[in-house]
Length: 80
Image (tube, rainbow, N blue to C red; front, top):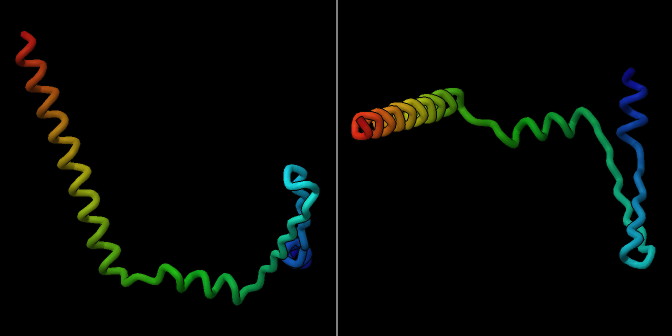
């Protein structure tokens, strides 16, 4: 299966743009394990920061739901 991935990774795709008067656009795509290792470093954050931001995001979500429920409850009481 790795040979199949290597064949796909080394493929060259040529796209023809007919709206631009037949101009050809070519795109070369290669994949290697070093590329994926480099991509993992793109979003390298400390776990503590991820945990802190997750707690903050969860708190904001819970506060929003509680606030919306209070507003809906107030509307229901005023319509009676």
